[in-house]
Image 1: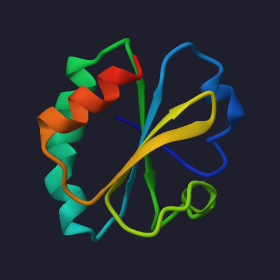
Image 2 (image 1 turned 120 degrees about the horizontal axis):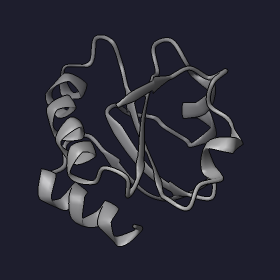
Image 3 (image 1 turned 60 degrees about the vertical axis):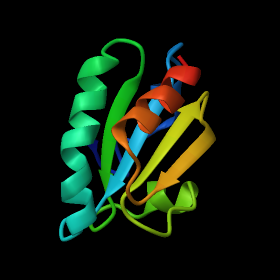
Length: 104
């Protein structure tokens, strides 16, 4: 999963014809670490059908504020810069894959 900073994250990433899946995580978030393996597996499963990025909220607040992130981990699925759905906390792998697949 590509890690991004507030400065690197801009509207150009939404110019593609694929959904952008943003994982908002934290350095000391144990739930984030638990979900990391699932996020990596989803990215491999959906290679080329969606773009996956990670934003560390401990270091980068602007993007999380823009999307209204209040808890970690949060997974946001966006199309053309608009957030379509958000998962807060733990979600089963199959549910995440099926939901992302709806937007591909």
